[in-house]
Length: 67
Image (cartoon, rainbow, N blue to C red; front, side, top):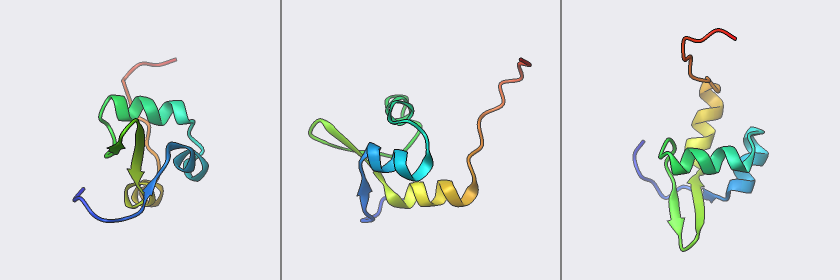
């Protein structure tokens, strides 16, 4: 994803849009699985990324294990 000047969302705003917990987003940021901007101690995620994620649909990875 190219860098842009789109709006930056707090993790709470991302939670509201996606239904995924803030802790899930914190983990994704820590593992560098999503683009983010760190402003001091706070973290922001580009709205453009979230919009694209919602448009494409959420796909959980398949690890090959059966429950």
